[in-house]
Image (cartoon, rainbow, N blue to C red; front, top):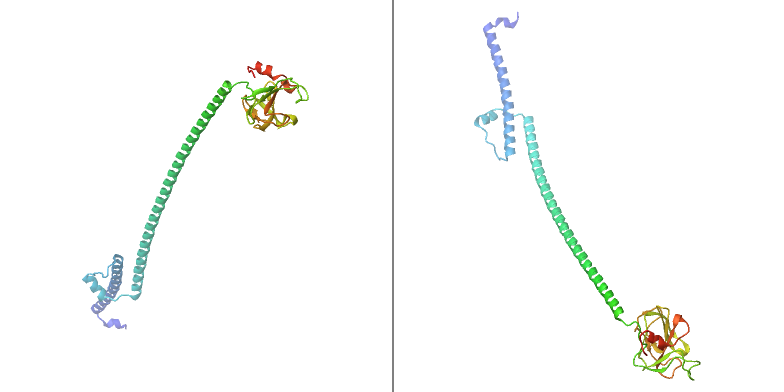
Length: 295
């Protein structure tokens, strides 16, 4: 026979009820322990996040936490969560600080760039103004130079128009020998007019033309020849010095040399000849009179 057969049914029911209550009480104790540990962990996490030194716990919670034992592994997990949250909070603070610093740096760079652009724009504008002023000044200078050149050209033209077409070869003179005159001083008849004057008296080209000779020419001494527009060549001899060179362009009255005694001469004078087409000399007196001059 089973041992339970001697126990009354009422006692067996009481035992079952007592066992059920013990199991239920054990389960409730475990739930309270777990809940108490979770509540303590959550409270500590909130206190750490808020930066509080101590967290006030309600009497009921304190009593529950005190009256129940905390699982060590759960405490470690809670502490780890709190530490991770603190690290995350610090990392977020550093990130916010870095972000703010980056924004400030970007703002400073933008301000510096804008200032540089403004300075460049100002410099470019100043250079453009200076260039425009320089161009205006250059244009004004060129216009003034052109005006001056035009005025000089007009003055030269007027002077040329007013200048005599033909002049005598020198001034302050007296004639000492004429064309065709014979004598012991020449190898044959005289070929020109001799205008006697003090040494150094200017000798002038009788008409406009080009200098084709300026050299020492034997018995003629220092001699200059000028070819004129109609092909006529005039010659000036016995000079003390030249004042022109071959290739020079002269006007009527331009000095070509000075009275001297070079070559075959008995006194200071200029021996003047006229050679039509550069050929044989002719009498200068009629030629000068034909051009309005009376030597």
